[in-house]
Image (cartoon, one colour):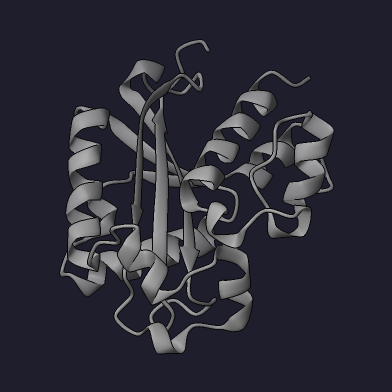
Length: 197
């Protein structure tokens, strides 16, 4: 990718982020995992981060969310889920090690959803998510600009011919559908879009 008119592209990083939650209402429902893949603007992977997070109010979980991600207190304990505070500390350390002072753009398929839950996670432990990201972009906007006007993720995956992530609808066990599988898929979609007409 050529240098951008407002600055060199090597001064930027993209954090592809996906979260799994106990429901759809940020501040009431909580994150149960987060996956992040840091890359340069050309889509070259720099590092990966994944944590399962133990929510403080598991009793608020919606059945639809549990069906999607397989969260249970027992399973999360077995798999080493961390507290929200430990998750935030891990994310900050990951950015420090992988962004190395570069400007970071948050990217997700449904960026408003992921950003809202990330913001709530950070606020819950007295931290400011805005210190990590300069901007946020979503993959459907990139796809739209490339002429793809059916923006459903499954359709974009099919049209671009990229490998999908595990999905319950395709027979996967729900706990295999995680933030890191979603973040990895987002990076594959981004790469394919960069190379499309």
